[in-house]
Structures are given as structure tokens and as C-alpha cells.
Amino acid sequence: MTEEVFQAIPEACCTLDISGAEQDKLVTMFKALGNPTRFEIMKFLVTHPSCITGDIVDYLPIAQATVSQHLKVLRQAGWIEGTVEGTATSYCLHEENIAWFRQRVDEIF
Amino acid sequence: MTEEVFQAIPEACCTLDISGAEQDKLVTMFKALGNPTRFEIMKFLVTHPSCITGDIVDYLPIAQATVSQHLKVLRQAGWIEGTVEGTATSYCLHEENIAWFRQRVDEIF
DNA sequence: TCATTATATCGTAAATTTACGATGATTGGT
DNA sequence: ACCAATCATCGTAAATTTACGATATAATGA
Image 1 (cartoon, rainbow over the protein chains, first blue to last red):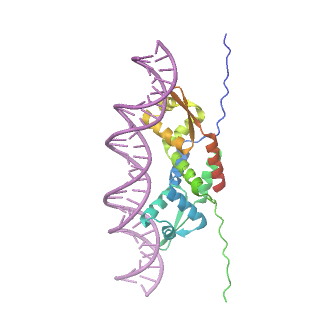
Image 2: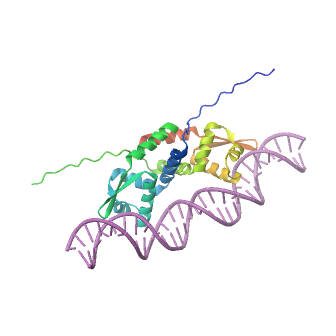
Image 3: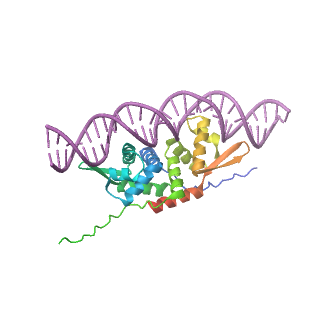
């Protein structure tokens, strides 16, 4: 008679234990940072906190409209926050969401 | 006479201290996971290690060609590894690259 | 050898993203 | 009230992504 063999389940290097709205939010954040220009904007914001749109336009070799569009994507994904100050808008990192992102990555990877 | 004021540099919540090829690789990995279907494939691989393409095709409501395309993106981004076994190809998480990703995120966020 | 199985790749259509110039909206100053 | 400054949004073209069916490729078995 054949013996019953219990195959050890290989331990995965990550759990990816997330679902629903949290997963959607995480995927959206991944997608937003999965673009070289937007990643550069994030890096710029680290060294230039509370800078205004024009500063980023001056820094990058792309049109103002395009920068504004990228800022919108980053804002809607939760990576950055915009504050209207007079005619300008100053941007900074959305620390709370960034912390949330780091915690999720720590948990699931 | 006005006093010279040294403005404290606000401490950023993350450094994003990365550049060059490492930054490119990270952005590519972000982009690959920034798609709901590919994220689901990754989750499936956690619970079904070394499964073959057909298993994923059966699991997802999309065509075989599309699954194969997504697998290629995940493979080229470094998230997964494919091993040809006869006529089939079995996939598993690319543990080394996943560990690299987690380390980079820990460092820069 | 021939058929079958499993998957990758090709060609392509539709959807989405990315980029731009032009325009609209809001604020601040004169 | 008017003008200038700053930024967002609109309209749109080009590029990329996503999806599909069809076909090619490679291994297995009869």
C-alpha cells in the first residue's frame, strides 16, 4: 500500500496578502510611480519641499501642461499634496500616504 | 540690523536616494505591478508556486495570449522566473529580485 | 512520423497614456 | 477695472498598452 505523503508547502518569499480597496490603492500608487518623469518629480520634491509648479516646470524638459498632468496623477494616487497659495500651488510629499505605502510593502513583501 | 536667520531644512519623510540603472529597474518594477491583472498573477503565484501558464489561464478570465503577454512583462521586470518543463513553463516568484525591491523601498521611503 | 499538448509570438484593433499648444480660471497688484 | 502671473483644463495627435484570435514552436507520446 502506498504511503500518504505530506508535501511540505514551500514558504513563499512574500505574502501579497492584500485585497479589495487597499489592493486597488496600492496598484494605483505603483502605476503612478511606474513612470520615469513622475519618479523624478517625486525626487525633486524630496529636495525641494513645498516648491511650486513652476519650479518643477523649470527643472524638467517638458511643457507646463504635461507637468500639471503628471502632478494630477501623483496627487490622485496619493503620493503628493497640493496647496494653493495665491496664484501658485505648492506641492509636497503626502507623508501619511507614503507611510501607508511603506507599511503595506513591509507587510506583503 | 537684521539678524541672519538659518532656516531649518524640513526633514523629508523619504529620501528617494536612487539613480541611474537602479532607478530605472525600480521604475520598471513599479510599472509592471501597476496593473491589476499582473498584481493578481503575482498573488496567485504566492499560493500556487511553480504553477504553469495554463493554471493561470484557467484562473483568470482573459485569453491565453494575454496571460502570456503579462507573464512576459512580469518576467522582464524581474518579478517572476519561468522554467521550461517539457511543453509547459512553470513560473515562480523571483525571490532575489523581490528581496532587492523590498530593500530599495526600505532604503528610500 | 504524426498528432497532441502547452506556450510563445504575430498581427491587429481598441483603449489608455503621454505630450503639446491653446485656452480658461483664479489671485494679486496697480 | 485692468493687467500680469500662475496653474489647471481642454482638445488633440502620437505613442504605448492591452486584449484578442490565429499561427508558430517545441516537447511528448502513440
